[in-house]
Length: 98
Image (cartoon, rainbow, N blue to C red):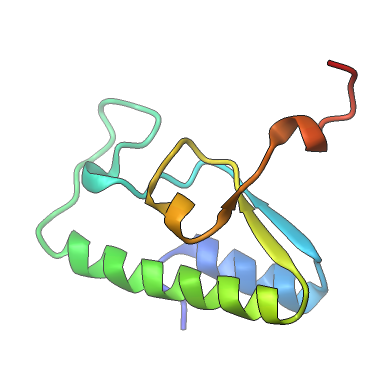
């Protein structure tokens, strides 16, 4: 049950440690694995089925968090994860006056 990604494993760990809110940064989940660098290795044809598994696990984690009054917030660049996790507002989490 690794969810095909270390992010899912980290979400599980944070849940069992007792975090109420988890902030997710830097998880690009768009076609082509368009991470923060143009030269990031592109996926292979089997990548889409792995992404589908990842999305299922992310949605499952989100359901588990919500059912216990917790939440996962997405701060990554706009991506398909916006369909799964609520989008966070960074200004609410920074300790400075705007």
